[in-house]
Length: 175
Image (cartoon, rainbow, N blue to C red; front, side, top):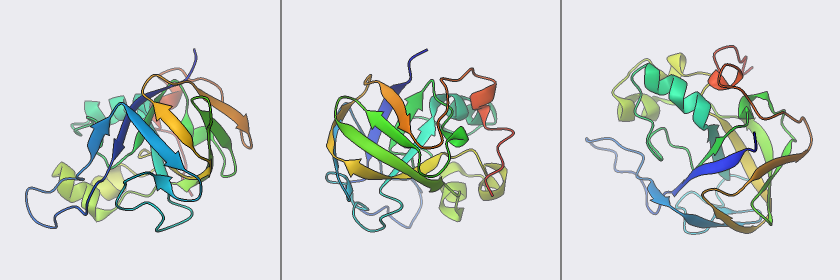
């Protein structure tokens, strides 16, 4: 199975710190990744070199949905959803080619925060979703990415296209 981009979102402005809580993500069909920065137009782009992009596997989101989490585009704060690749199996330093030209490097596992609990209406979410909210990455080479574009592991830790059982994230140790 070829891994592909299943959805793209970005955050055009800061999230309101009042109810109803949400991540303020906008779904798009196409996005421009900027080297050393993140997604063009994203409110958080360029703020932290290790956290320019956050990605999660569609298969992991499906597992969270079975537990009652809302997992539509951007609803757990992700920017890129990938189908067919176990992102949590990738070691920091792994590189992914997104589409024809963009290149990103995994920097760390993403850690759920209290905001996820507020947005989801699940105060225990930061603990319950640990190891299942994806990975952070930095943009090495910019480019245009589109929903449906292929995703290839081209260096670093490496991982294969996944089955739904291995992508559930239920056995991942994020330490």
